[in-house]
Image (tube, rainbow, N blue to C red; front, side, top):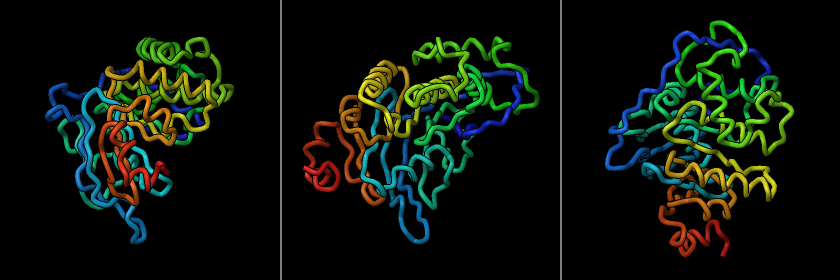
Length: 276
C-alpha cells in the first residue's frame, strides 16, 4: 500500500474534484532498470541495518529480497517506500532520484507498497478502501466525505482492481468482515488501485494457509510483466516459484544477487540462510 494508509477506523473524506493519473514517463528508466539502490546505508544506535547496500530491479521482473530475521529487509523496504530516510546512498526510480522524497510523492510516481502487517480502513467497504487509494494516488487532500461508490472516477478503477484479485463479490462487505487471506488480497487491490508502475510487496504470504498461498502465487504470476514487482518474502517456495532474480541480505549487506537456481547453489547463501 502507499504511504497514505494506516490501520484506521477514522472516516477520511474524498475529494472527487480533480482526479489525475500519476506522472511517470515510460522512457525514464535507465538501461531497463526501474529501481536502482546504490550504497544505501542506515544505522540505528550505531548498529548498521543497511550497510552500503546496492542492487537494481529491471522493468517487468519479479525481484525477490530474502534474508533471515534481522538481515535488514524491513529497513530496506522502508527506505524504498519513503517511511525511513537513509544516512547515505541513493535510490532512483524510473531514472529519478527519490532518495529524499516523502512517501506520498513516491506513490504519485507509481511506486506502490503493501505492508507486512495488514493496514486497512476496517470500517470501510472493500470497494471504499480501494477507491481511497485511487484518490490518494492523485495526491488530493480529503476535503469532504461522500460514499466512494457514488463517485464514478473512483468506482470504476476500484471495481477493476477488486475483480483483478478476485474480490469483486466482496465489494460491499466491510473490510473487518474479510478473512486474513482476503485482507492480503484487498491490500494488493489497494496497491493496484493506485495505478502503480512498481509493486513493493512486504511478505504478502505472511499468515496464509496452503490454499491461500497457492492463490496468491497464481495471482502474482498473472501480474508479472504487467507490473514490476519487488517481493520481500520468507516463503521460499513462493520466492523460487515467482522470482526472476533474488537478492539475499545478511546483516544489512547484499550477500548475492542472481537467478534462483544460482542462489540455491550459492555456498554462502546456503550456510547463512537456506540451511543446507
